[in-house]
Length: 407
Image (cartoon, rainbow, N blue to C red):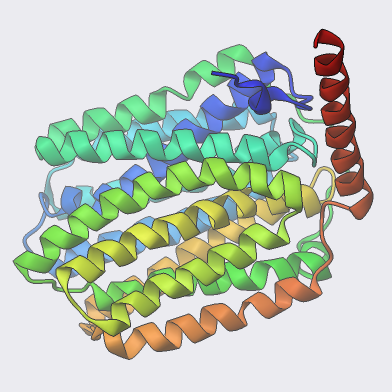
């Protein structure tokens, strides 16, 4: 099997590539796994739903706060030291789950998990961006997200087969401690550059235009809480199957999306992802059944693959040198705040909805959110796209000449 397409025109060296993918994929996999497992973990600590919901609020709230702190520390603390603290804090937070007893310890563990969720996220994503060039960044991003969701699916399968709390903790420790290997492979140095202010970041026109669909994507994901709240046993099984297909689809199509984004630009994957996400919600509106839930979740995985890869790439493309951490921090803060808001409305307010009521509105919102992207400039310049097409054309001509000589 010819795997030349994986490394063609890639400037990042193999050691740096290994470091970037290992650090990013294990960190992201741990985060997704902990979010996925949070509800089941803390059902072990309290029979009172109110305390469980409060713990979840601490988890998301302190996660958003830790992203702000991490971005602020990124230019004041050595990057490798910050990442070491980030990983170690995650290991301790995961281990604290097994040691926690009683409501107070449960809430403290929630705070610790929240702080460890995103403290180093701005730095590790900035490291990812600085280690790649714009022409290859999406492909590397696709590989990172592919590996991330392979690890997530593995963790979900293992903890589903054996639902013991200790197994969940051990899987979390495995995912989080794997990141230590990346610190051994690379010094993770950061070039000292004066950082731009938050105001400069938030007034970056193209970033805001690209960010709007991301906000809508997160809102749409948050609204699904209302659709899947309090499912019957039949629908609960369908949701479990659908989620597995969703994660698997995200990983596979993230790999595809990386090559598409580097070949055709950043706009097309975002537009395609939003359209497919709109279609996945529309499917729920036609007929609400366990099968439609499975299909909808599986199709949404395709959209997630395209969108997550692109939005891991775009802040690195548009971010100011030395201030990319702030761009990435804004994305993760939006994700956590939206998740916190909809979780609170659903669980504290007891709000739920029929799929048919929300699916149409969600589809329209997602389709309309494409408009700002159409107005944004394409990050991959026409010159770079033209140069790539010309190189590919020259390569094809060269191969034809070689073949003609042989015959």
